[in-house]
Image 1 (cartoon, rainbow, N blue to C red):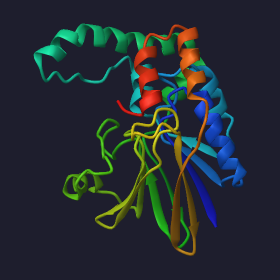
Image 2: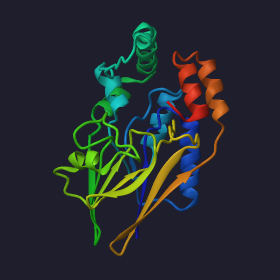
Image 3: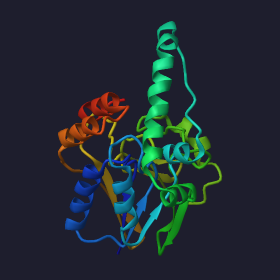
Length: 251
């Protein structure tokens, strides 16, 4: 049997990461760990989180969209749908940019190089099972959302050219385990900032044996209020926004 642990969207939440790793290793160390991007931005421990992740044995990493924003200076496109949203845009942009600047100010040049050089895709071939591919969001980009309820016909184009039996991804902060057009899609959810209404950190464990795969998506408990207190202590520029997500698990 081959056991693969899949973590994604840690977002600098060291306490959530430690809770996930403790839960994972209580089941026995995995053969490999894949971390599918969005490693350090938003929560108060970017450096400590990156150090912990880089120390994991047999771990491989992807670059997520927020990792890309940090190392390139690019920012997500804004969508304005009402006069009220337009009026609030200056404040939203100021918080967004301050959020990323706060993290950039704390990580080292070596951290920058690590994040800059992360790949956009991981893959491996499992005996008797076939190829497993992982991306942050989709094969084509790191920002498109494939939600649990995204209709199959909207997912089909994102599977074009995929030569794999399973596609692993993150980005949406919502767990998924479904089959579309013969491809199993698995999203283990978010370690650091779940957005499915359940604030507990989520991750996936995949056991491959005899040509099949058993997928288990786990939720763990930890002290969210300690993260919120640290956001306040360090005067994080997005502390109110991040705290609301930590408590409500909604964007």
